[in-house]
Figure 1 (cartoon, helix red, strand yellow):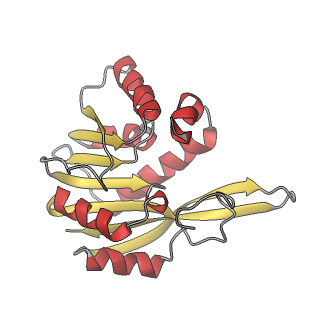
Figure 2 (spheres, rainbow, N blue to C red):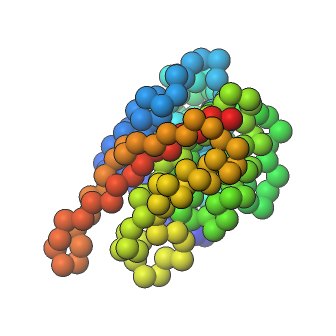
Figure 3 (cartoon, helix red, strand yellow):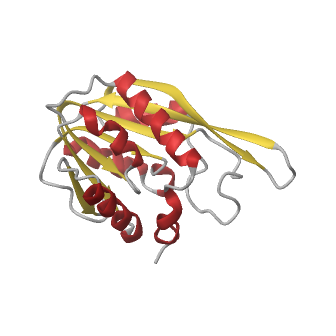
Length: 204
């Protein structure tokens, strides 16, 4: 059981998570003209907060995560809300095979900083997309390591220009980026700290 399995049952109780997901979903809608002919794929979906915001605008959504706890909560939400356009997939795209199905949009939020090999995950996303399809990545701006604390071994956010270069090296074009949210926290020293979140979108 990992930390996300433990957090899953109370994840949706955090109003900031719901607010953040709404802002990210709204920014995705600004970047991409969604329509009911499009099949979406969310990676690192958690309990599906972003996808539930985007569901009215897409034909179908495959929601993928590696946390059993998160996916169990998600399955219950899908069942309770009688949703028929969502499919749940347990996978780790760094080590597992990519789906055979192709998608018109892939989106992921605050997931890549947990993944060591960013070039590989972007290449796999590229293969999963139809031509003229979109990748949307919401991530933390580069920070001093205080967001997760000293025990975290992932990326301490990302430089936007460096991420843009990675998008382009993976084959994406028309790359654009906007700030979509600020995560606000109070430190142990009682200081207010903001961690900007950007949305980067590229087209295949």
